[in-house]
Length: 412
Image (tube, rainbow, N blue to C red; front, side, top):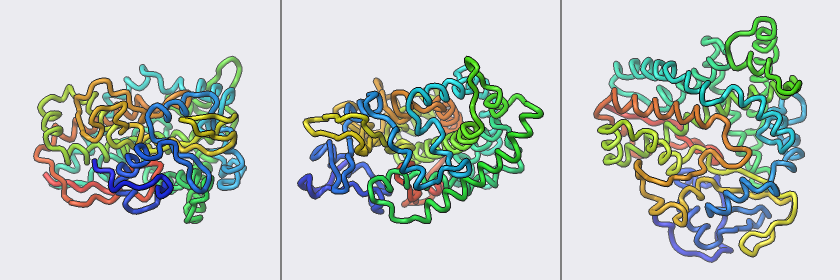
């Protein structure tokens, strides 16, 4: 991919709200990596684009989430109604993170996830039955969104009648993820995003706190929420605030990543017909295909860390407490790690991408997202031949932490 005209490092600006960046962030990633790989913004935060640097930040215990608390409280408040990010494991360091992850991970073991395979296949087939009769579909609205939402709702024990209620809450919370990093770097341009995100978090929290959690305490079922309530390790349980935060996190993370993985992945395949044809002819390639789709245009583009001590990277000193933006999407296109990184190759070997992160915050639901994407994509191309894009300019959601499509219309 052409990285554009050359420029001096001082002319480079990491601005994820530019329309051209939303459309395609990879040219800017390439320029930053080539010209200023340890880039300090005029606003003070650091931007890393090389694979080795990003992996170091994600795995090195000198970097963590401690230091985000004042920012998160300023943005989202400190009460249970708004503290989903503050008290969730997403923004905790050891030992709190270790304790919370140990309690929640019991519900995401490979054995538990594998037991969901038949049900996920059944849901995908039901959704495709509806779309096939119509002769056209929006992959996002008709498959990529409802599939993981149904799965996580069933896992949490949310009644089918309430699923649609969650859609706008999820969109607003997902959009507000951008506000965290942007506020820290002085680039927050739309405070209303935070207002809507807070309202959605309050509504989602109230739904669990006033409805499902009391019900499950009285009448436990074989679902994830009941397991979280009962989760106990060495006498340690989730507090009510941690339980509410975990429900919020699991619901949003439990489908946002997969929605974007399926949508972005199908778009990439449709834009590379030879790769789509190879997968259709050999469905056994689906595992390596999904790994390549994760690398090529992943659903999570960046994450943030704050060093607890002064750290030097490539001769540049990053002071204790300064924000570091690790560009996962850029690392996954680093030619030093992935030969010909802008080429989609569903048979790519040695594909050690970091689409799900790395280190202690590696995505807890990675195996579930992989399984859902494998089943959805294979079912779609197997059951609906002659699939073609029904638009020349797919519209992207106006987010930059999470990268995903508003819609993906296809014809067949």
